Image (cartoon, rainbow, N blue to C red; front, side, top):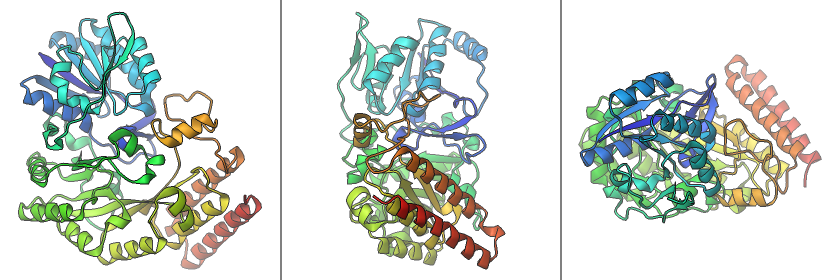
Length: 479
């Protein structure tokens, strides 16, 4: 048996990063995207199949041009039995169209699409339209050798013999160490890069040969109301043993890979575990720069110092809002703005880097809260690569999505490619307010991008003028 793993091309004119947002993915224009991460999900499936002695090959059509006829010839000449492709909610139309093309090559070939979450209505539509044999979710990896042989297992959706849509029961891998390690040798990592490594100029960091890796899955925090990690990975944190993490890092190094972006929702969830991991990285001379995502309240000087010694370059950390009361009630309970300032100071003291993650447009958020968010970004004196300011998206599977659907907050116009549509309003912000907030957001980003063009006095004046305009708008529209 031979299995072909295929990462579909991005929608035309776009670049898709499937690993972000808990596997929902993010999408951007070719001009604006500064990175490309490897298809770690397919490489993990590859590892599981190779462990069972099944022949596997991987093609990433985000790194090579897609030619339908060339794929057809390859599949027929090489006797491919099964194709496993990817399906992301944010690019479901182009992904399902690609899966349909794969199935049309030869109806006897089994075709499966791998996704993080199986949404009933969407998945039913995709399977019936594309004629593929099934959609498999993340945990189907435990039975992937049986699935590619045509067996019906847990964690998948398919049509039964009567053409009825079926979603099989969900089941998990109890011992997370039993998850097969990714077969990274299947993909040429010279194509893959990470935005934070690309943007940092004061140290020499890899601009290619970057991979991703998990040391844990799941998130137990209350921000799961809007955050996709809980929907895709669950609210119980499942941690891979330090021994297995180090073994995988050694293999990564042996492949000539030069950098790692850890995709754990909360990398430093258990402090002592990370200290042990870092000590093992140092002892085993891993010597690979890495980046992680975590929470400010799960970091301190001692931990950050040993992380740096082990190769950590920096952190993505969620702040969400510049209004402490709003953070406490609606975003990240327990996070204080004093902790944010302390964290920034520690990052500078250790000569590390960070990117603070902010969002606007959450339910119950008012113009005054948003003004404070913009002001905090300016008060912290952040560079453009030191923060990320987005408008909240109601990811399917989150409680926010349920509320947004129920209250008609979601954009009704059909999007060109995405299953994830932005909210046009919420319970405190109308459509005009959302539009204005996005205008302010874009203006702020452009200001900070061009900051080096201004003298100190000019920057101070420009910053003050922007803050006054946003404050005036917030006061006029206060609720």
